[in-house]
Image (cartoon, rainbow, N blue to C red; front, side, top):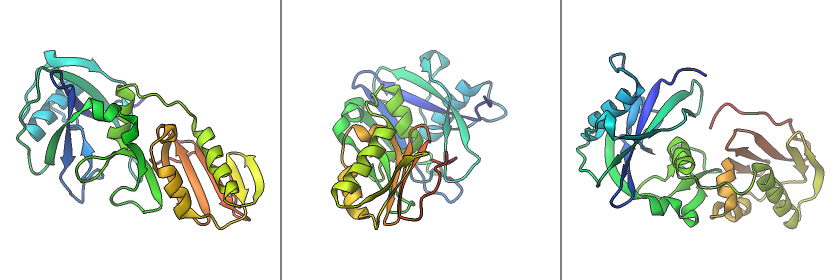
Length: 260
């Protein structure tokens, strides 16, 4: 695997069992502009290692100074994906502090900081499929409501995996449920699943489908994104496999996409 190019600091306050998140300053050059995230960033050539990167970024962005001895765990590296490649391989580090710490934000990096109770993140009823700023309204992502934009994407999935929130159903089962829903609404099945593609007689009632699957449920943790339009539904799993429900005559072989 490629060497990680960046690191993030997951700072957990033991007394209130909360975690520090920042809302990134909106900048045209930042693909995660305005999003909730962990403090972090790219490795500097002067950084001794990626742990040093996480500590430096935490200090620069939030004025929170921790030591290497505050490290509780290093998590598996993972890709931070954006609309188009190249993607960024990130090393996450978990730190534990006794209590929530005051932050002084660098306005060039962070617009807001918030200590979020982990109980709120563990509450599965708070997880929904939502539209997110800057993306087409017919696309929904797993996310959690916070002040301002929702928590979604790389940081969302990192939290879900770190906290061990189970994924009780597979994306294939969710795709089958969506297809069954369309049939209940009167759409005729023209071709059942083949190469992760099914074909129905359209048009697809996009607003109804989005309303049905937007709410909380086990399906939220199986889906990385759900795109619903009158001519086609695309469901991407957390592992970036894709299922397609197309309208008559437009079926295409599903592919594994490179983006989030």
